[in-house]
Length: 182
Image (cartoon, rainbow, N blue to C red; front, side):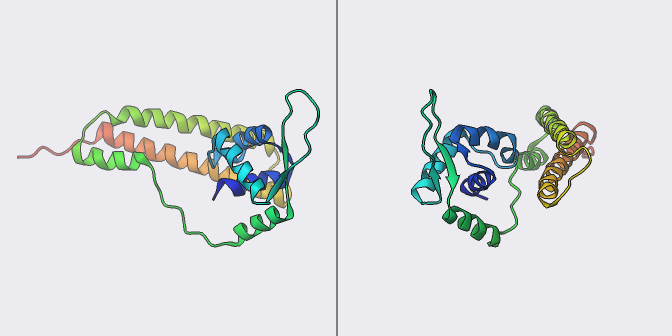
């Protein structure tokens, strides 16, 4: 996925300013695709230069914000991107390399980092569960809500997976010792 496509998606939902997009991004798709506010503003400028979005006339108020809306070319680009084939993502997680290294050179103090990671994943899981309770108290209704719910459920399963994996690693690190060599 690319940041421009995430921004086009947000602008399909409704026109808004770069700062509003950054806030919306942080509260939704940003949980699955991280971008800094500077990256968002740079991409908005590129999308506008490319004729995919346009800025709306600025309102004569203090602290003016330039708002953007998607153009037909942007919608066509989003549809093209949705239809393209992608390879399955490759797992790139430093913890996996650290565990491999622990097997080769350990024991080390990796268990402290794993405890920290468990805590971070538990916090994110709690946040996703809060979203689930708030946004889908009766479950999803309709296609749009069902797709958003699927994304949220994937995030929940992802956090559960990493909590379980980290707990297994911690158990191995703290309870399994190498057999004595004779």
